[in-house]
Length: 432
Ligand code: COA
Ligand code: AMP
Ligand code: ZN
Image (cartoon, rainbow, N blue to C red; front, top):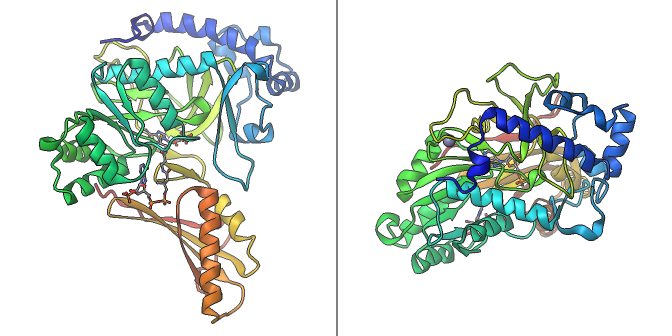
């Protein structure tokens, strides 16, 4: 039932003892990082002052901007010769973020993912297929190493090419699949087109779904369509990737591994803790990481801690499914995108004005982004406009990793934005 009973079955007070011990070690480790040394000095905090979990609140928050400002290696807390892996966010316009790992960090990450997969009943003998993008997307290597650590035959199918993905499922007898919820819908559609009945023609019994917000209703539909149990998986690159919080078989909240993370939920405006059980921003402190520990990292994800205990016997707290974000990040096809990335590309074209609108829709279980942008001056030079559109699409795709539809429209066509521009219209519906 438990892959790591020595950690998974700790009582609340045992967890607190472990967290306190690991927090102290983490603070010590942070003093090797130029960023945290300066942070502590500027905030007049001595590392020895942080003795218990309550003391954590004396430390300022760490933000994505801190990661950007100290790009690439300013948060390294070990000599760079000990770093064996780097993951970086997409984007060339703003400064990207970088996360560093030692070999021990990678081992612990694989252990965390393996623990999650074991918790939902996967075992050696299962065949695990991963439809995440690989490379910098942490859902790729993260699940790969975790599934291998558990001892499953692991198929690194990667994103896209849905027909081939389905051929792998039928030919190799895939029993468990990791897919983002919207892509699960696409897989089903193509199975139907191919005359494949997932219940009759595949061995699939478990789906791991995550990387984007989804509802209970969506989960049920995925389960019914594919004849599987679907478990919610939450993670983020700054905390390694997948393996941060995961549903157990009860499917009632996501256990967050408190031997890896200290959890706080704060009001995103006041940054004060919210009353118990209320929704706020998730703030995480890593306590099992060497290369790049993060103290009080503002994830920008909105959620709450579920009350009560879980019948599975784990006392690690459960997070409710994510309710949204406290910033303007969008997630499309499992890719994180900030509107500023799009604006920066558009503003590099002399022919374009300042007014643009991003509309998100979904058709046939595929997210679509349409970018309408006003031309500075009237033009009926259609060959030029066509070439211009193509070039904008190319540059946007390089930046945001998905292919948008771009429409050039005459000046004055789009609604004028008053005050803080509302540049994004999210019209996506629950399709599956
Ligand atoms: N996962 C897997 N495949 C996906 C996908 C996703 N999240 N989103 C789309 N696809 C598939 C499409 O169905 C299509 O294949 P098909 O035509 O054979 O069905 C193919 O990828 C290309 O999709 P398209 O929408 O035409 O391309 P795009 O240029 O807009 O997007 C992707 C490119 C899909 C490669 C990019 O969105 C991506 O890499 N997504 C994966 C992100 C990811 O793994 N995130 C981490 C999860 S932890
Ligand atoms: P990345 O760093 O690319 O892995 O993206 C991490 C972000 O994806 C998180 O901060 C969340 O906003 C989102 N995310 C990941 N998993 C989930 C999930 N299960 N439900 C909702 N959002 C998620
Ligand atoms: Zn549980």
